[in-house]
Length: 237
Picture 1 (spheres, rainbow, N blue to C red):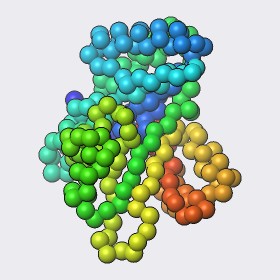
Picture 2 (picture 1 turned 90 degrees about the vertical axis):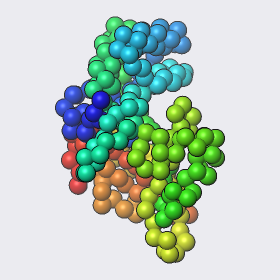
Picture 3 (picture 1 turned 120 degrees about the vertical axis):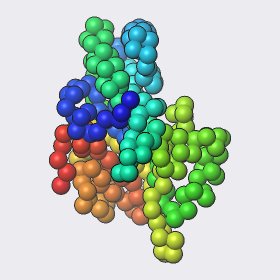
Picture 4 (picture 1 turned 90 degrees about the horizontal axis):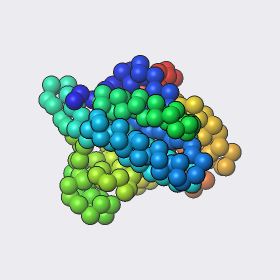
């Protein structure tokens, strides 16, 4: 099944869901564990009917859901097909069904609360160092390149954040090469940046805001607030 572009996802108007990184994310507020469990059972039954299921995480007062297809098809500029981890129509269909189930169970979506974390590592030698990070993060060489045409590290069980590799000059001066990327809902990005600044951080690059805002702490360590503006129907600056 073909991967969907951001504009296609935005056109679906999935009010309970936000596109973060590769997948669709939703948080539902529940009064107690039993309510959450019954909601998850109903979601599971809907997934059985469609032959597709979300990743689920439950905690005190919430149920977090992520929808992503492991077998989405991406076509590069040369027309070659790659199997990637991304949103497809089956994710859209199940997201709509889950929204209906949430209404039936009287649980409320809190889309502004969703977030996703990824690691970035700038290097000129991703093919060389990726096996080391695959072993460190997941214990499996199969996590290198899984669900992506690059050397990116992705754990099939979602135990650890994805690690992707950015381009770096082989001879550039020593600098921080690791950074954390925090994907948030579009409506809270400005607030998240403001909170980081109030805590002592500094914006060092907002040329791609609101898609990417790079913030440094007082020691110069960098993190990035990320928003998928295309899937939200938001224009970049």
